[in-house]
Length: 465
Image 1 (spheres, rainbow, N blue to C red):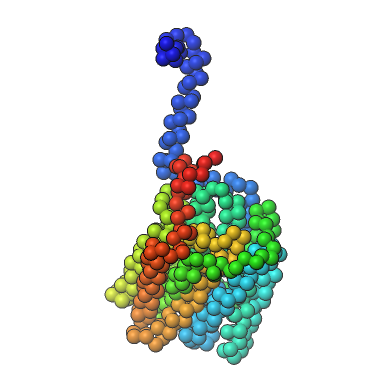
Image 2: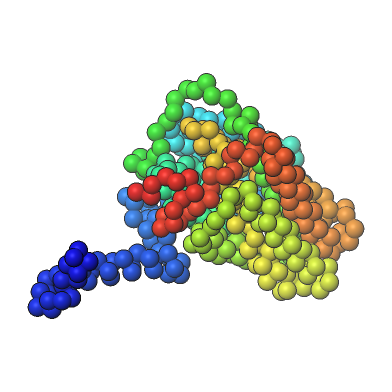
């Protein structure tokens, strides 16, 4: 009978060849079924950088992005120290960020059309000249309007983080699990820059001379972009001129940009308020360290989020991430108003930062899936533009509340601004998702970022190999 003939290796123990041939097959099957259950958090990242050229462009991108966390803090310390006005410093930074919000999408469109290497280097050089002009105006006590003009000239700096994400999207377009890990890593890299940048800026401005932070930031940015642009093997191909409409007209993108605007106000106000709070207690140099702890919490949460098995549509997770950020942002406010302690504010900011990276990773995932093909860099730059616009408004509002709000001498009231901004972002996201469920156009675009682990069957039934 056929059934008994299948048991021939067991019935004849001397035929060891059959046993040896069957044994490895069973072992391999057991290994495949156990692999998704292993908790090794570093495995996805180790696999990510096995692709040729990825480590080089990532390292160069981090070097170019490090000044992101330096420029605002350096400008605030430099201008406030020279002109004795946090309101002026916050307004100048807000003007520069608002100018970036207007110019950055055009720079990104040029990058999509002509390639990263051809556009990024001259755009960064122009921004570097604007930074040098700001240093000169502060150093030689030029009129206040020159500070606004020179800082606005730095708006041509390209979005290096967006260009790095565009490279990952190009390299991993057929691997959603690896793309989720790459997006999480890039967000963690952003947070690392915001963690180290303020510390470095505060150290340079208070230890060497007030203009040192802005000068060093410009040099690092220029060097990083030059190295990044030289990595041509991983650069996505330019699309050339296209008749496609702007991603701003894509369903779901405008509401998402409004959320980025409110989220940016969280970061901008928190930065200015924390610096003023530390300065009011005679420890201005400690502001960079404290802000670095907030970014450290976000960086750790981003790396952990990238190693998790994420299921369900991103638009369902997004309001929960914003709700967590709103809740945790109340911790610095409660700590400042009840204790007035700079030491206790540090762990409160560390905890508050832990909801930031998962929120931004989820938001960037939604941007990637809603942006039309061939316009990814422009779409992500629009998201960063919204973020920068919010940072600009948050910086100005935070500076005004610090100087003119209730309890302006202590600087504690300003911590209510990031809480209100986070609540506004949650309200916008919840309203947009409700509209999508009611039959709005956004429901079509948010179902894709679901399964992210290759061992599990993807929800779109595409073969895994």
